[in-house]
Image (cartoon, rainbow, N blue to C red; front, side, top):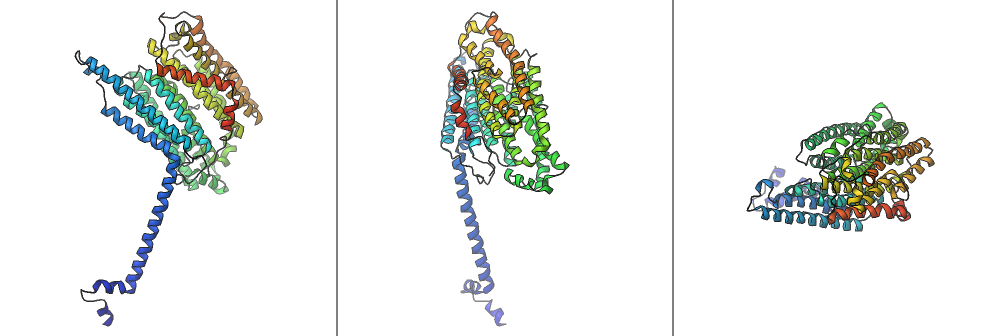
Length: 544
């Protein structure tokens, strides 16, 4: 009774008696301890997020900038062709010009700001960046620079491209910036979920850009690309799910540690998981036999979009492939024969099929497949020299391949024709453009003293050093085969008469893109030591 009366105080001191009760005090102490732990974890999480943002400012600027350009394109939309009347046609043209300049200025500011942020971002590896989802190491820094440079050069091409109508330029540029963001995320992904999200960001934006032209072939190419891409994503997700089921991990460092245990790393099911995962990545880089989408997508896409797809996703996909294979290191002996065989088949098929092409975009698509085969030599040898050769050749490939596509933009703008015959007599109409185009083609073929030759020299040297003589021989033979269709384009430019006699003039942005690519190809080819010294410290893969 006394106990009951102690729990039934008057209304005046009811709250005080509840606090004095022992069980209530224990409950309050537990609640205070729990709140203290929650506040501690929130402070710790906030500090970690702020520290992660220091390394992730370039991507933050690029993401908000891309969304801003997309909104700007919906807000500042010039009058389309159907809205331009006889009285309002001049106003529509002025509005179109003003809005187009606004998009280019906005994209330029975004890329410059992102570049400045990347220059000052920390480079020391930190596996706790965003809770281990990404890693900011020297390798990812180099590949983020390649992604930014590729995006900038492609946007310079877009300025002078006549394939896309002006009232869609906002969406066009915004999607290009989103692809650039996805490429940077692919380069620094350290987790399977982050890798998948980054690849889908690139893929979904690419599907839209491939179908951007008001042409039936563009819609057909985008649909084929979407179907193949969805299939590859499903296969890759199935491989990821199997890998997670076998190891219980999604982070690359955790997967590597799990595979060190014989029970988790053995069995036919593990090989199925690894094979499905690599099949999805092989699709992204156009590796044979997952290359079928490449020529159709390039042919249906605007020329600058084809240029972007030929360089950006290949570099980022190869970087992601390197990280994934580092995490799957214990399975490398089982996969090595397959990778070696597919490397040779990729470069050989790309070069042989390119010989019979008459459309410049399809020719460059199969040339891209062959170039991926050369890059896979550095991946196949699985050595530090091979990784260094990959980085050097990626820089060379960015300059020389984007340079050829920039020349193709100029020719297609002038003639409205994508046939190789449109290059006839280009040396008479624009001697400087023909010279630079020849420079890029010879560099792709591996002719000294251009940067492409030095990159191939390092790749073949890495194969020889690792004892893969067959890979080196296959690379040399394929380079000789590729010389045929590259020289054929040079023959058209210099030895045949032009279809029209008027000079071909380039606007300033496209001229700047061609010159920058030409300077990079020639200057770095003549003086490659600075580039090699710059990349030497980045030629290792860190997961921790």
